[in-house]
Length: 279
Image 1 (cartoon, rainbow, N blue to C red):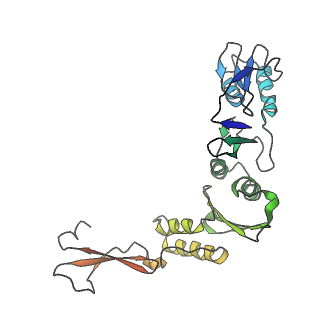
Image 2: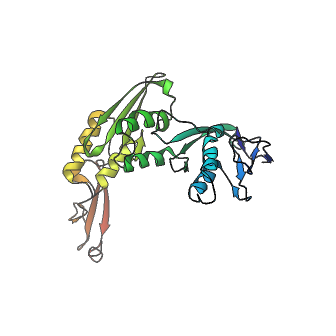
Image 3: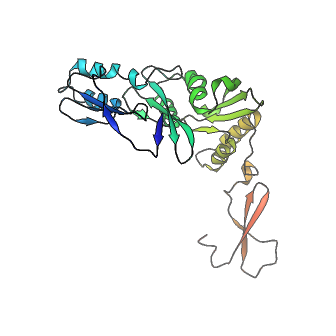
């Protein structure tokens, strides 16, 4: 288990069979998968993934056998294939004890086919969606279920995906424990919303990139399948018509009032005749 807030001491690994001849490695006894490396020219490499990346870009100085030896050693560093990932990707989970918190947290780590280590499931998800190197159904039913929900799979009673307009995917995950439901939205660019569907709908309603008809379509879709509520009273009462209107109140001559509509509540702003031109 990794530990922060404690002294870190590395010791050389004697007779390490997972590295090429002439290389050296060291690891910290208190931290899982903490091995570092020195190649035959004593060049320091902070991880096996970094070493493989460097070797693949400098094949003149490293033989295919050396590269393959380092790749095979990934398993000894905790990397393995995962059902929630496409071919070429690997995964490992590293428990970390945070001294100041007095608790253990899990660091989810993903290794790309280019041997890049990524710690954020959201970043991995966006890559899948943008580059399309993972079948859609696998993204939704495997990756999201395994890495984005934040609930162990054995606590999920069942789940369903609804495919909507604008390449939206709505997810409902039903929990065993209390019968609760986790609501999710996955956009076409891989942005993931978990139990925060109101925020997504507000963003759509405020985004000029969507036509009014598209906003209405998305709003109807979410309201049909998920529990959502937007702060906008209606599609026709969002913050677009910020025009000055004669006030119903008694104002001084030449003054007008700007009215904002927020979920049925009016926010009134007074403005003098001298300032209306630049507002």
